[in-house]
Image 1: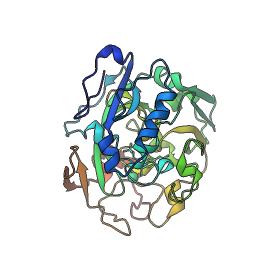
Image 2 (image 1 turned 120 degrees about the horizontal axis):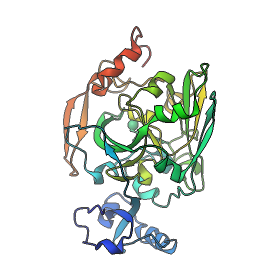
Image 3 (image 1 turned 45 degrees about the vertical axis):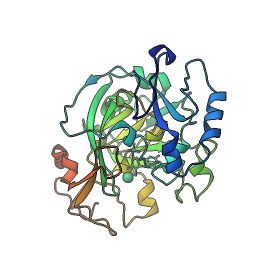
Image 4 (image 1 turned 135 degrees about the vertical axis):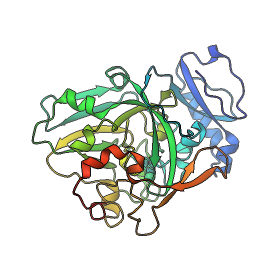
Length: 334
Ligand SMILES: Nc1nc2c(c(=O)[nH]1)N[C@H]1C(S)=C(S)[C@@H](COP(=O)(O)O)O[C@H]1N2
Ligand SMILES: [Mo]
């Protein structure tokens, strides 16, 4: 399958072999203030393998493969267009600007990949790139993603429940939390080479969940979106998606999952503990110290003014998880 962006040229199927391709016009990059598009494309072409495909030098491309999956959710909310969800990102390893990841992550090489799951488990395992796509039944789930910055999207993820992976490794009864870690590779990630580019984060980016949160059926490991494998800027090849929590919990490009008996440190909590808690449940009643969380900008179309202001819902509307926090003061445990 080929995704065609507005103004993208028509291509025939056999030019693409089994690769699917997203395309961004160079104009977009220019608008974003990126002037090196020519050299980026040149170096991409120089490294092209037999399955790679480049349409022309006026487009930037990220390569993804079509996935086979079943549909698990039938969310009727209007989906965010793929070109928006893949060009307006937070991925500080590739820069702090919203348009930095799509510009800077295109050369991100995820093959080979190694995701290890260990700690307080009976059967630690390591998954390679192919295992991520073949060891679990892949499902499409359409989820709302609510960033703590008060914008949101509706994204069709593809992946599997984190619970199905945890069942495989058999957590010990002493395991109370699950810790996650993003790849640390300064050679590939400019934000890890330079504190100015990376927003002052002490890398690798780390996140964590309580084990009951990790086992909840909504919590997924995503390996794809919009029918295809994840593009690099969205956290290829595997990222967490926890739809009732602020987006920063949904850690990208994971290499390590560790079951532990202690609440793990989390990147945004380390950076600003009075602004970002461990729980980070979407909560319109608890404002960020510097802005209200009562409403959000729902980004549903690709255009500049394409956003609706809507009320933010407790737990981002995923009411089933409320039982996980019974008796907890959610203003204190923000
Ligand atoms: N490793 C890593 N994971 C990350 C981030 C990041 O900077 N680094 N940003 C987070 C934030 S703040 C959000 S809102 C989501 C954005 O996901 P998206 O770009 O796929 O929409 O990724 C989260 N995961
Ligand atoms: Mo975010």
